[in-house]
Amino acid sequence: MRIPRIYTPAALTAGADIELDDHAANHVGRVLRMQPEQSIELFNGDGRDYPAILTDVGKRHVRARLGEPVTNASESPLQVHLGQVLSRGDRMDFAIQKSVEMGVARITPLVSERCEVKLKGDREDKRLRHWQQVAISAAEQCGRARVPTIEPVANLDDWFRQTVEDDLRLVLHHRTEKSLAGLDTPQRMALLVGPEGGLSAEEIARAEDAGFLPAALGPRVLRTETAPVAALAICHWLWGDGQSPGA
Image 1: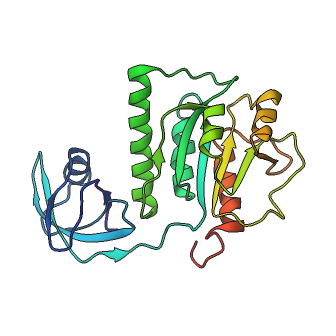
Image 2: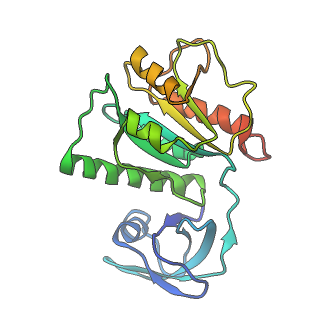
């Protein structure tokens, strides 16, 4: 049986007893139906995994005793900040989940001219919490040491200013013949992906004026939820850890 990996925001110390938060406790006790003396693996984003033994599993609480931490080497040296324009239905969930699996460091949901999703107030807060949980679950599943942050929703121009210090900034669109080949190796990069209808010509021009390079992933038009996954796979192959054994 595979040992479940569980994220917790709590501080973790070898030998300590810890009570899991409500969400993690529900997953361990009600979903997985685990019992005392069974093993789990905890992580809190500090780059290490903490093997643990369940000591108490109740209907409303779960406690575990932590073992010695183990360094987790699953994080790529390439730090990618994804700007993903909001999409309808479960497409945004898919884009976030798969981008986390592919090694993204941060994700900012964006609004653009052709964006058909409108989020305000409580609805926006609820979606951000949901997307952060999607990222947590993806990190648990794929064995990552850190959980990417889902940033507040931003417009394009504000996001351009947030990424000004990144080594490389790319805007994906199929109306260019420029590829990723031949670019210098970055350590930090920003990647802009448009909505279902694509970025407008004016938005692409604004991105280029802000220092973004246009790039295409091939002759085919990719869906908004497919584009970040394909781009991240290529970027980590070229400049991250995609060519390492077992990656």
